[in-house]
Image 1 (tube, rainbow, N blue to C red):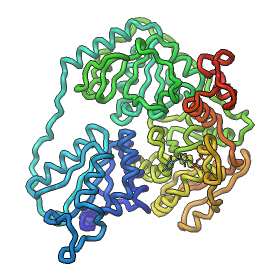
Image 2 (image 1 turned 90 degrees about the horizontal axis):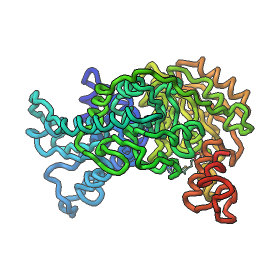
Image 3 (image 1 turned 90 degrees about the vertical axis):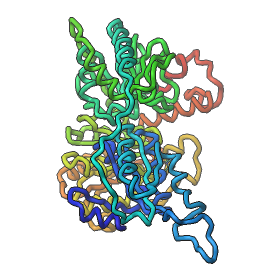
Image 4 (image 1 turned 180 degrees about the vertical axis):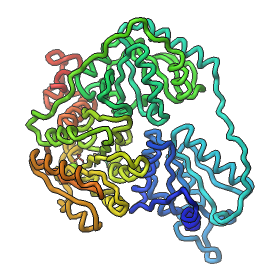
Length: 543
Ligand SMILES: Cc1ncc(C[n+]2csc(CCOP(=O)(O)OP(=O)(O)O)c2C)c(N)n1
Ligand SMILES: [Mg+2]
């Protein structure tokens, strides 16, 4: 509390109090993805442990987040007795929370004295900002109000190995110059480090088209010439992207995290001989790691500085875009209508589930125009993330896509959107439960209580809401929501139980094939010989 009081009295910093610590964590994570650092303040124990899932997500998805918590006094002992009773919020050891946070952050620090406090705070914040990962900082209660000496000492620079960097840049460029039809695949790190301008310089110098990983979706305006959309094996945005990337004679992967989802549940076909990889901690080709000591951002900057323009520029490929307008599935029609309403101010924020897999083929229309927890896949991210995103960029208009299940977890953060007069449009896909789980194993455990979602505006006392059951109603509601700018909107989009988008269907089939080895066409009856359908059931999944 003294920290909140001090913040209140500090011009230029505003503390935003969320409805629940998981919301605070998602919100601060999203804010950090947009600005370079999010800061999350929590109460010791109850708050710290509550927030942990969100912080784990920030770690898994490389988001710069500084978590600050109070902590036990420095003279506190571990043994609670009748003579020295335990303090409330205490769990097992005085260090339990600090230890637990070591597992979900890159660095967990505790301030130990007033003299070293400034240096500890500085290194915590610098670490999070430089490495784009969460850091935990604990302030013992007895130091909370301490005066601390602060010097203007410079931050220590990380060691950079420029000679190695130059050599690797040259070897990358040699391969790029020699390639006939190279492609860049860029991942979330390019967005986190704000390297869009450098990547554009590389792509334009030699007319190299750019696809993004699933986690990197939306880093760039996807309507720009040369931007292909998402590449991830069978869950690529369109079949054309997949073909283009897999038929390229060189794929340069910049800041792409190797995850099952980014690899399209292991359906990505990228031969080792045809890839070059640069990301934090790994610089190399498909077989060898050249060096881990060159910071990723520095490497990309050097690559952009050194690349020579081609003598004759080529023409950008034109790929057919996904079009779900003629789909008979209502979920696809809703998504197509939402896509038609995106502009250069819209940021799509998708939650786990059909909201996410259904929207992967959407074309977003600005840099940083899409945000979703597509690796850690935590439910409950999107509504609180909208708070963080619009506070970070008041000019943007978030459109939140969220399942009914995820909304029931953190949807109450709508309250903060209303009280602050923020205007995200929250679309809740009401498909009567956990559709994503139904694909694999269904049962009553996937059903959830029907809520009157539109009544949230009465509950929190702000915003406007609509319930839609047809594409035409969705069209009207979207129009009305766009025109309502002084508060948040909620559109409950009803779809049949069990109905899913083309994107989620493909994802489910890919995951199922990975888990069971069964071809999706055979529905689990006969093991697939792969002869009738394709190399590895791919054509079947694309159908
Ligand atoms: C915090 C969390 N708990 C559980 C899961 C497992 N899980 C993945 S998808 C899903 C269902 C999501 O339901 P909903 O939000 O309604 O989206 P839908 O699948 O219906 O589109 C669940 C429970 C998860 N990913 N995150
Ligand atoms: Mg659902």
